[in-house]
Length: 413
Image (tube, rainbow, N blue to C red):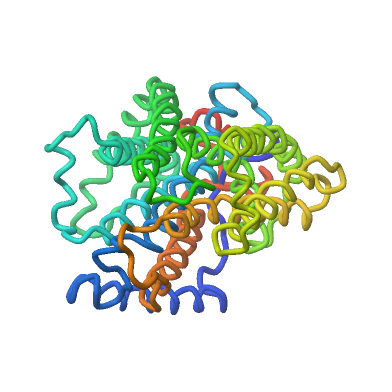
């Protein structure tokens, strides 16, 4: 990290006009969510026996897992490859991934019919199931993310524990516990960082495996034996753009100076990764000769074209331009297009490409489904805002930061 930068809690008003809007959207989503739990999926969704999954799986779960990939990509860059100049973005990326995976888990909990059986995979193992592998890896990786976040908690509260009233006698024991936890994590954190990277590659690819076994139920434009590889490559390609996108939004929201030197360097790494992803995607298409389906004018061909052109080719060309890398607006736009492309890819795979056998009618998300998804997104943003105001996540010039403590997170000094 730059010697003049130090992670510190942001000092700002929590409630702003934008925050009030997000609160209303979150509350609206929670109302529909209550209806789902009290009256069942059919009361708020357009799901049925033929279409057992829809928007919640495609966006809240599949797209959410991919967009949280910034956690393991930046961890690999900063900690495993030891790129010290990128340490300033590690904590925001970690927080985004932690909150993202938390809401992915909640999304699965909400979407399954018998939500009270969500604990079954923990004790009813099925090693031949792709979905089991995804579930176990997501649960373990989410736990790893919370462990990786613990040093921020110890750094924030060591020497500052001040419980009120009758709980005052716990101040010293809690502070001692925090110090022991900090020292222990300092010696073992590398294990969790490596485990997080490995676990991420496993479940990102296994989501693709889940759709491979759908077989002829999927449109040939997306159905391919290399779908697990494409899912993994697309998740890796969106990792850095998601970090750039989040960093710029946070800087704008709190009125902070953009770290353009760091973000530009990060952006320069996106084009090669996007290029590899595009090469595999187009190469697979030509090997299987599925480009013939693009001659038909229908929903599948239009959505595939939008996904690839707008979500891969256009941002790839933008990230190859030095002018784009130096411009905050253009860099933000290019990152947003990659995020849109990956989100469209997951929607296309799980909704557009999927055709149930003997179908009648079609599926389109209900107002309730849209409200819950928008509500979850709003709640995630609100929690991110709260976390960066409580914990030392975002790095600020050292003159504006709190006094240094002995127990700072490794890589965050």
